[in-house]
Image (cartoon, rainbow, N blue to C red):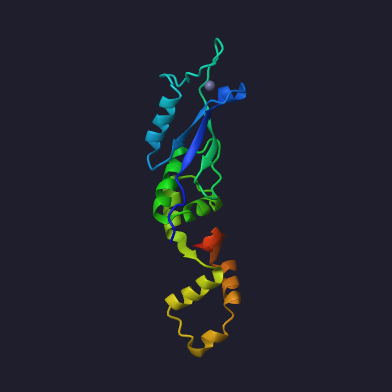
Length: 185
Ligand SMILES: [Zn+2]
């Protein structure tokens, strides 16, 4: 089992500045605390009590108040959206500390946006990292204690795996590590 391969970071930019052709943004480390992250962003952009940002090149009467995520690192296959909820990003980061990049692979397949539901689903469905679908098929039968006797050497495990992964399971490419396996039910 691998843990997350890198630290999670997002680049947050002021949209007003962006639309005016100025790059005004910062990288923020993401951990498990969404409130803290939101506060770090607010502070860094010098937001006042109305949420107006204190950007350096504001023309008279300009108001900058919106930010967006314009880059990200460390989220594996997960396509972090411009307006992604910080709560979701923090929940994924926390889960990934325990389960590695499989979390991001799963989240990229699931449209579930509630972090608590996503966590529960992941923990229910994740079947680990395996060298291949074929390996998983073999391990599954070993775990079930299927006594195949001498037949074991005659079984077409590729074919067994194909059936399993059409049916009860799906896998996501884990790069050099093989595949992450999830059950569908
Ligand atoms: Zn701005």
